[in-house]
Image (tube, rainbow, N blue to C red; front, side, top):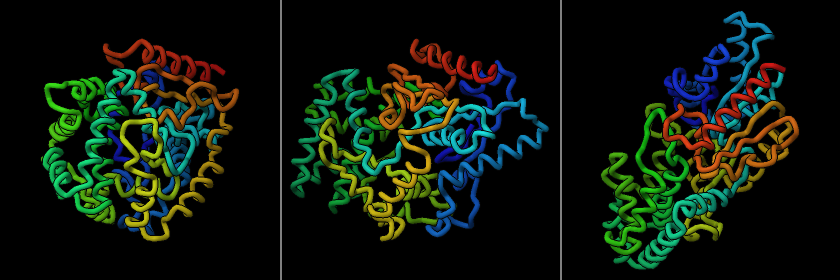
Length: 406
């Protein structure tokens, strides 16, 4: 199991679909935490100068070294075939590991993996819109009405004060950056619900679903669309034990500028933001018109964050070159690896950057799961699982069986 942009949870060594597969095939399970995340701290702090040692390429080299260490330590032979697993960014790493080190890993399962780096990921919110509309066509319409009300209120000091009270912000909405941060926060509620809708998460299983949010937006007894939009925000504040909504851009930047391993940003915020600024982009802007959140959070807002956190050199020119380098290195949509199965969920916004129908080449396969969200195939099975998810897990099993019997 390949680690990603956060601390690795040991529960994955005893739970999850890959554990069931290991039991079936009598496999050894090993998991590696990604450098600079969790307890894997190769430098004295997270200074920008030290973060130059953080990249997907270096993460893959760590995987290769770790694989060789395990191979030697357990006296394995070439008859022991390695299969890599990963979801989201680690799903990309799983596919790239097979691409870059085909002599070390025999096959790869790549779940919910973005395979194309790009600066402006406009399709993220397009899929959010489509996923909400799958439940209720009116849901995005109510959100659009609420967004229009917010935009009107933002024009005056009195209107901003109303929004501060309604959405229980921790600080006043003062600067233009605070305004954009506010829009990002409230739309982020729906992004969170869609991306992780009805999954069987091991670490924290939230009860917040698309159904709950869309039903709240449709509940006229609460009030007008704006009041319902604020009620959705209240649901999130209560679920995660927060007293108020953080929208201060200054506080946000100050937090991500902290370089100590003891800082709150060391959980992964500073590191992953760095990787997006120097490797991937993936900026979930509102620049498309095919969603209900208005053109409120442009891609330039994220570029500004890169410069404010890491310095003026981290501008759009650097990122565009870096994104080109990433796609040149791994192939982007022209991926040329083999024995890889790409698994994606219909509801998951990240499927827009993955392989969902036609595989990238004749030596790879795709599985597109109707009605599921991010990395749904990786979690433990549940009686509530859709038939499409059960079938997807069986297809993964069949593919691994095929690889092992070649």
